Structure formats: C-alpha cells, structure tokens
Amino acid sequence: MGRYNRKTLLAVVLALGVVILFRLQDPENPPSAPETPPSTPSPAPIRDRNTPDDPAAPRLRPPSPLDRPVSLLLIGVDQRKEDVGRADALLVLTVNPSSKTVKVLNIPRDTKTWLIRGNGQRLRRDKINHSYSLGHGAKSTVKTVENFLNIPIHDYIKMNFAGFRSVIDLFGGVDVRVRRNFSYKGHHFRKGPMTLNGAQALAYIRDRTGGSDYDRHERQQQVLNSLWEKGTRWSTIMKLDELFRIVRRHSETSLSFPQAWRTLGTVREIPKEKREVLRLRGKDEWSSHYYLVVPEGERSRVSRVLREHLEIESHKKTGP
Image 1 (tube, helix red, strand yellow):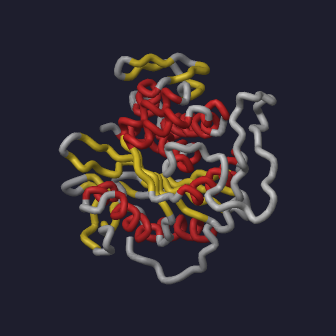
Image 2: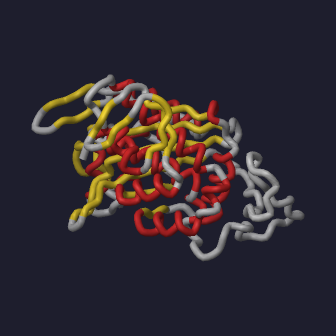
Image 3: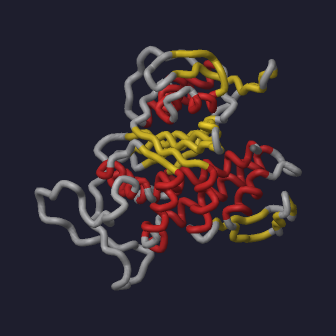
C-alpha cells in the first residue's frame, strides 16, 4: 500500500474525529440533549451560523465546552481478510478549550520506537505501525504512542481503509485546487479546482510521479481542510444515520457519548487559523528494513509542544 495512500486516510480519520465521534455511542437517538439533565434552564437550540432559518434543519442543544485539554489518537488501519492489520496512519489531535486551539501531529508509520502492548509490556524497537498487531489492537497503539511522545492519550478513534472511500463519497467529495495536470492509476487531474470522490482523492494523495515532498504534503492538507470544512456543515450532520452505518462497520472508539459530544462542540468553534499542523522530522535508516529514526532532540521538542498544549507539567521522559 502506497505511502500517500495512508496519508489520505489521515484526513478522513480526522474528519471523523471532528464530525461524527459524538454519534458513535448512540446510533438510535439523535444527540438532541445531554445525557444528564442540566441544572439550569436549557439555552435556545442552536442553528448553523451559515444556514438560513430552515424549519427542516435539525435543532440541537449546544454541548457544554470541554473544561480541560484533551488528546485523541486517530488511527487508520490497513486491515485485510485473515490479517489483523497495521496502524498505517496515526494522527494525534490535542484540543485546548481555554486557548481555543488545536494541534495535529502526523506520526509516520515507519517511525522506529519501542512497541508497548496494551497491558504495558515493553517488547522491542520496531516500526510504530506494528503496534496494532501485538494482540491488543488499538490499546497497544495507544500505549506505544503515549510512550513515544510522553503524553497521555485520553481517547482513540480507529477506522480502516474500506470506510475511507465511503465517507469521502458521503461528504460529497473533497474540494481541491490541482497545481498541475497529471494522471495516476487511471485517474486524471486537471490544473485548477476539482471535486474528487473517494477513489480520486486516494490517487490524488498517492501520486509520486512529479513534484516534491512539499507538493504531496500540500495535497494532503487540501484534502484535510476540505473535509474539516464539509464536516461542520448541517448537510453533513443531517446524514448522521448513514454516516453512522459506515462508521459502525469500519471503526471503533473509546469515547463516551458525553465526552465526544463536548469535544465536537469545542472543536467546531475553533477557527482554521487556530489549527496548527506539527511536523516530526527524522532520518532514514536502512538495515534489513526501512525505518524513520527521530532524533531524541526532535522527539523532545514535539513532546514539549504537545505537553504545553495539554497543560502538563514536565516530568521524566520515557524511552523512544
């Protein structure tokens, strides 16, 4: 599976984290009210600020904002028949409700680190994407990422590639601006604005026939930004039943309904300029396999940024 195939999945998993994570625990009932009745009079139902006063639009009670910073691990799994799969897309999302900011970190699948089982057992140094196949699934991946970044992961959302195409198509595609004419595996892209379906978006990110790493990263960000924008529209929220069916089939989460609903409410109010994408720099290592080795100084730098965003005091580091 291509490297940039996996990068495309990052965008989809993030979109799910922002849009429908609050729906995962309660497929039968729309989130019209919090689980616990409020002690004060309920505020007026909210409407999307970009939507006219349409009586057909859903009326939802606004969730109370988060009262502390939270971290989510968004996992894209390359899962096939008779194979447990590997965590081929890893995205750490931290949300700070006080500063109304979001930070996003992509952890490359080939990053070399200690693999930690879900029960806390340290095994060996290997590619971080192998963490999912240790026998505890997402729990092992969570433990491994916590150890690598020296931060707590409060919850996770996992999705496989089969759901990728369905979610993109349900969203009505993603809007991008193609910088050059090119073709990749039967898909043709013309310079200028295009709306891509799921299969096209996959090819758009995977292409490595021209351009630089920066060019590919820019394409990934275009897909990510389009999903983020479309995911907060009422037109998406009104498709929750169909969206949930896709998610139930292809994903799992540790989020409770109340926490997910509050996280959605907080993230939805954070403007684009308050979202920061972090880069994790490393060096190539070739032995029997290819690895990305992140220097200790770089790992510490990224860890420090995330810890500060989560408002965690410094303490002794764990091993990479």
